[in-house]
Image (cartoon, rainbow, N blue to C red; front, side):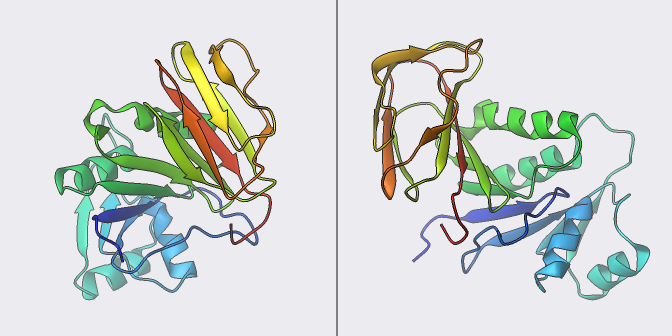
Length: 217
């Protein structure tokens, strides 16, 4: 049973064949501009359409308006991406679990911008993840137990500063009170051995990127 408010923000990135983002009953579904096409592909209606709407067909927009769905339209010349505007909306409305669905695409700048949203200071006490069904990214400020499948590829990346005192359980290449730094690649391409892994560390922020070994995990 879902006990916390969860929002899923559908960005306009690529879906990976055979992999889909998992949805839960009661999720608040946000179409972020052209991300509306993912909801249409999944035969779902959004609860909100937000952005400058330069990637939304006029017929699709008319359908959304006719259905009485909330639309927040912004001018193209703005200081925030459509995705950041969507994230601010759900944060202001007290959603504590947030998934950015299908955030990865052809543009490296957009991908880096999406990852940078994980660093927002107002995410304290909340959970934000980027997930395209195949790859999931989260930023950790402290210890965590993460659901995995044996064989999943797990990369640990020091985010912005050294991460010290790392202890891991459930990974093929374990760390025992060790450090990772942003300018080295030691934490890339570890492997999950079980259905969960445990990560603890003393200081810093750790970006966790999980690539699933198979669909449905």
